[in-house]
Length: 268
Image 1: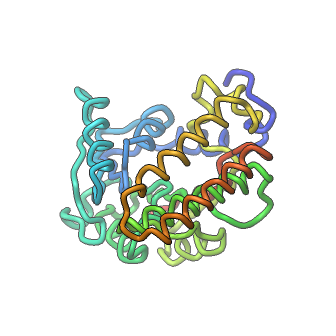
Image 2: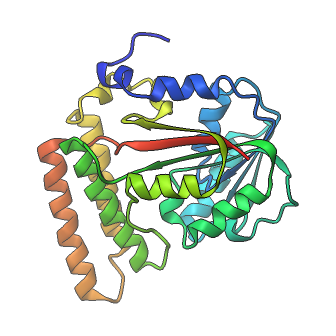
């Protein structure tokens, strides 16, 4: 691996990539796939794989556009995308060699129903992979500012009728993972995502106050305000707009860095 920024090198991202690099994943199901970002990561890190199926509920026009974009991006590859409710997977028992869900638990109305369904369609001895950001622990001020933005975006989505819950704690994520009763379970705690290892901007992003990160975060907030500008609940709209301004101030002061997350892998 090339020379890495200090923060990224000190994280568990490299250990997670090494673990993924030991796995022949076979047929893979990615739940809550969105733009297919985790499929990208798996393609770059897995020892081997046969094919991928990415599913998402697509409750909004934006999410449907994300899936259409992913379909074009993976065109010609062994990747299929389907609109599907993860609480009721339309697959037979033990249909997949590997199942995964990445940073999507907080978008689920019924977390236990979804992970139970994922385990049902996983073959005996297959790999169950889960990764999810958490809101507590020793986060930097830049991570806290990013989490503040995430909580605000969750309130925007909720106002628009889109399921988007508060970020889970590390213990809540661990409890979900342990409740699956997987064997050979391993849990990694990382400050940086695995995909940072392959990002051209990894040195630039080491500084949470760099201008590119700042402008991207501000744009996300402005886009969120635009999403509710025609909502009939004027009082809530004004409150969220003011909260958005406070999030901007926090990011301007501390910068923004992704929250830490747990990476869980075990076998059925």
